[in-house]
Length: 636
Ligand SMILES: Nc1nc2c(ncn2[C@@H]2O[C@H](COP(=O)(O)OP(=O)(O)O)[C@@H](O)[C@H]2O)c(=O)[nH]1
Ligand SMILES: [Mg+2]
Image 1: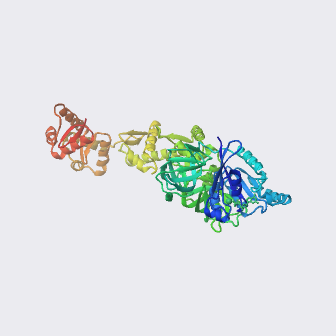
Image 2: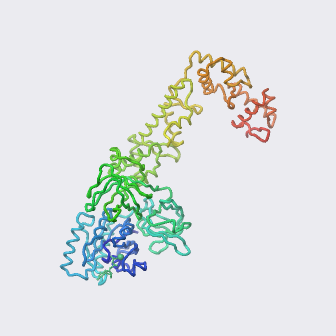
Image 3: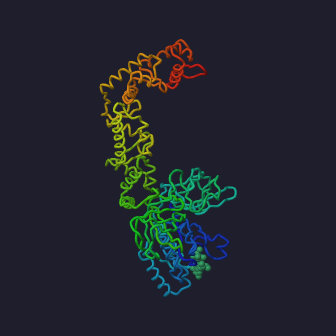
């Protein structure tokens, strides 16, 4: 079944609410004040089943200039608009403003209901038609049906319904498989159920039991009940007016303008990169950093427009801008927005979001304009590539790419394949955790790894390599452990580096010893071999050999790196042979004894407590023994 949203627009008192009532039987003016004053203040909702069975939700908007903000909250999600113009008054200020808003928000289609036709003569009607044609010129409604009608006499209503049917049939359905978004336009409580929010489901499918998030606060709840046009349903799809019962949340925590979506899909931001068109009849040019009212979905924010390539923005111009909001909002690329001047509040322009989560601080640079140009005009593949570049050294999952580019999963996969074929994208990571990196970023990272290693080898020619973690800490901070591991195996496979015992080195690196170093190395080794299980500390050995620290230390490190000396604890080292013997003899001990303690250890190796205790602790760490009170038992 097709679902779509029909909205009204037009100047106050031109008959919007009366027309909706005539078409649907529903009076959308529900507030007492609305009844008393005879004007609409809030959004009104009704529904209509078209002759072909299409279920249409109807959003009736207020026409008073003071409520344009409310009207704006109703326009997002409209598939077609009925621009209501009273035949007796003709085109009025909010007729134009509402038309501008629909144009800026890219409502795709619509028609004009020339209401109150009962009040005018044929000649007058023709004159008004002429005016209307002029106003619609160059807009999405140019050449649309203009249907004279009267809610009072019923004249023209069948023709109007017929024209709505034709437009509705041509409307493009919303994406039910898209990223779930429901901009909230009302919040209230129903006795016995708790908090309910309503809105037009822009895209996706929502089911009872779904976990949902309310942005920007990122409140969480689980959908308990769903209603569409007053009927309880199990699921609702894009294009339906939807009421959602959210247990565990208070009415005071949610407000019009919040966005209901699935958890962890969208991220609210206080900055957007966007295109902006200033209306030709905007009253004055827009200065850099001008404070404006920013309308997105059902929300309104105060914001500043940062101009990137000009000092002043003239009416009628279009440009790329950076928007800085005073409160966070969540958007997707291609979302349309409207701006109104701060005071007086009049609609002055609008545009399309290009990047919903750009870095906050930005100074205009030529590359940036190019970046935005590609985000706006580029092919799907070009846009995906921009997102990869912007993501730096953090691999992006296909899911995240989908949200950032607002493409279908298939289109994202295709773009990534294309980029991989071209050598521009690299699949990083493994087993489910995989993401995509831009090849340039990978190359940059490889260059850094190799440069750090080369530098280390130059400084410490006798050392085997740089400790893995040490190397990681010298790389860009955002590098996740998984990405780092992936990076190292990639360089190992390419035979550029080797990783041995947690040390990373360039494959080409071969530590070489001078004659003096080789001699000292032999002396240290011999000293440790002779010392058995009670060796001296490195410092006292250095003193007794009369060696200089500058010479002694690198050689000593080298012996440890090579595994010829094993560090037990602090400055207790054993030669490799003694160390192997230590392990063997303890294991042998366990063949006849069930445990070992410090005293037994002292006897076994003929050492003092000063050595026996660190030995046992080391064996615990190596999972050869396990401590049980004062005894050690075999680890397993
Ligand atoms: N004569 C006549 N009066 C109408 C017609 N439609 C609406 N009205 C009257 O115009 C006034 C404003 O109508 P309303 O629907 O509240 O206008 P809205 O502000 O556009 O929603 C009300 O007093 C209606 O009764 C019509 O077709 N013919
Ligand atoms: Mg009204």
